[in-house]
Every structure is written in structure tokens, then in C-alpha cells.
Picture 1 (tube, rainbow, N blue to C red):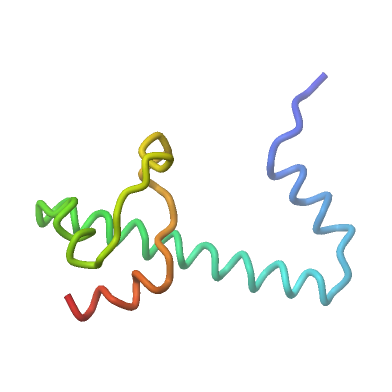
Picture 2: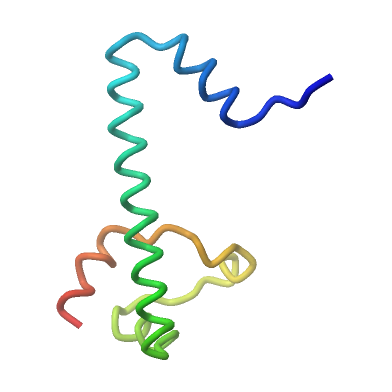
Length: 87
């Protein structure tokens, strides 16, 4: 028996959606993808500049113990992204 991939599941779900649901899905998917890309660019720039905890400290954020075990690709919060240009 062949395994079902995430793309298979996505295609099946999209086929079941109304046009309005499909539009909502597309908008949400686009916004999520943009947030992930921004997060990746911020992380890459921070690492290239040698900044790690210094940036977090300047932004007034802290690393929660529960987040330590999560992957580094977590999505930044929008309020943190809005602060970056001012730093």
C-alpha cells in the first residue's frame, strides 16, 4: 500500500472546498508563506551579522525554556517584526 503524502492530503482537501473556502485557503497560505520567508531572512541576516541573543535582548524578548527544544525555524511574531526596522 502506497503512503499518502501531504500533497495528496492537500489536493483532496482542496477538491472538497467551495470557491470561497479555496480563496480563504490561498490567502492564508500566502500570508503564512510570507511570514516564514521573512523569518528565514531575519534569521539569516542575524546569523550573518553575528547577532543571536543580542537582537532578542534589544527587542525585549526572552527565550522561553519550552522553546529551547523547538526548531529554529519557528515563525516570528508580527509585533517583533515591526520592531526590527527601529533597532
